Image 1 (cartoon, rainbow, N blue to C red):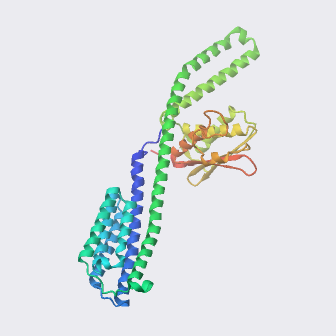
Image 2: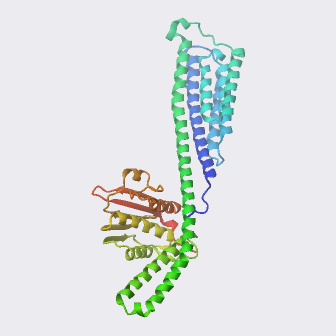
Image 3: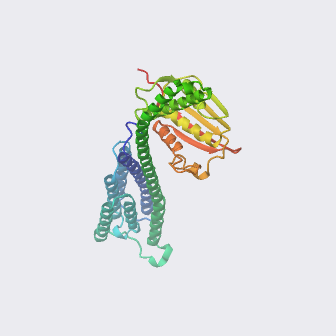
Length: 437
């Protein structure tokens, strides 16, 4: 089995994941800019009207209006489908540095205690940007700091450093420190969470790619084995047919019955081989047949019961209004695999329930076996995760999981309080619904 047509390659999905992280980071910068504008406006008004220190209000409000326009443009940019990369984040931070420099120049230059907000820009650059971009941000802020010290005009603040906490300059530095700290804690945590989610998503995609590669190898092996088994099975069928007409076997009822049973098992083996070869090709190809949901499920259950030694089997089909679908051999084999696993765990009793939930097909298989180990439930669907303790076991649910995932469905399992376990298969009906011409 291979991934369905149209499945994007891992590299494309990686780029998509990075674009999602870039958009989230740009959203954080927009939020930070809103907070900065509000804080800067409040500080400017407090200093100008509260402390009686004259500031060029008109020019500073124009700069804040420019930040407002930048945020509006950034919000519009988020709606565009084009990916957001390092360059856009880098330019956005450079604009923030430029506007901060202008505001500081208009309000005391390097003597303004809020000059240490440059550190916030540098730290954000170190977290969000590539290495070269971070160094450019650091060099730029350093040059801006030096320029402010060279050409900035100090505010007419009293030299009252000796007053400690009652000094205006010390109070401004404390406010700047707290503001830097709070913003860094909030936004660095958010940025780190974004990166962690992206890394987890990429790890899941790598695991899925490895599993699909594993499935391809097993599919090739199964297909090759099926081709190789075709000839000996045909030979056995011919020999058994000849034996059945030979006098020594024909006159012995017990021997004739055993030969008939052998022929039945050979036919079953040939049917299994044909199913493997069919599944190795297109599951919805020319060999597929039109059927209905009820007929498909009833037939696969009937076929499974005829060839398995189940003693007490309960089958309940509450699908509701019937629906025309395409008989999918891969799905059929998947349900058989789940039933086989349940039968091995609970040979005395087994139950299969079918329901329809809006546009989804729900199938649950319940047994009275020992249940799943907790470690297996946590890694359900991973290859070679099995409670049977045999080499090579644990592929059944792995293959079922990947078949369902290919069709857009999923598989879940849980242990029952009274003992036993239930495995639940969910599949969108659109994946098997017959397309009308």
